[in-house]
Image (cartoon, rainbow, N blue to C red; front, side, top):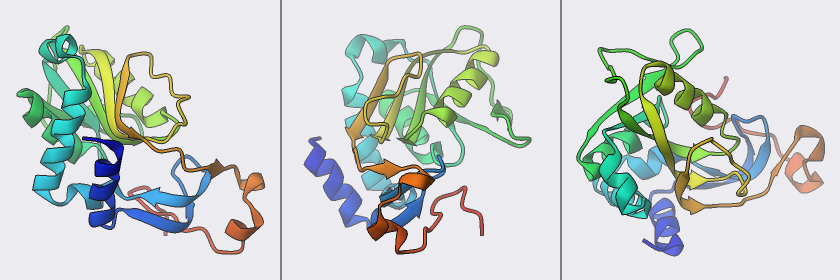
Length: 194
């Protein structure tokens, strides 16, 4: 799947938003990707996961025993990646602020794991999920995401495979351009505070 085809999927599902957004990273942007919208169509989610799985090197794909994603954003794409790779998928969540496996999910010692996210911006959630997976006995051998918004600066400590890299500018609070600052910032996504 080419970049334009991926963007067409986001546009068709109205998942590519424009306005003034305060991202979970604390940075401001004129663009926001609502991956939950692009993934709400099971056929679209399946197509995107298959395309993402195809980006993984063949020798890496054959080594993956489990897919683990961080809740909430990674749950659907993680499940679909498990389907695309023919392995079990599970997720880590933060009941007390730190990612952990729950709900009877467990890894066998040394399980080779692909950690899958929806969007990576700073990589903080990804690194926290990777640490939780390693603490649970798994070995994260690679990470994947639908979208890399890091501007190519991400280092997760393992090979990283995004379906698409989108480099919409983001700004620190004291760097927001006047035309963006003229409108109120909206906090989209699952970590929005009302």
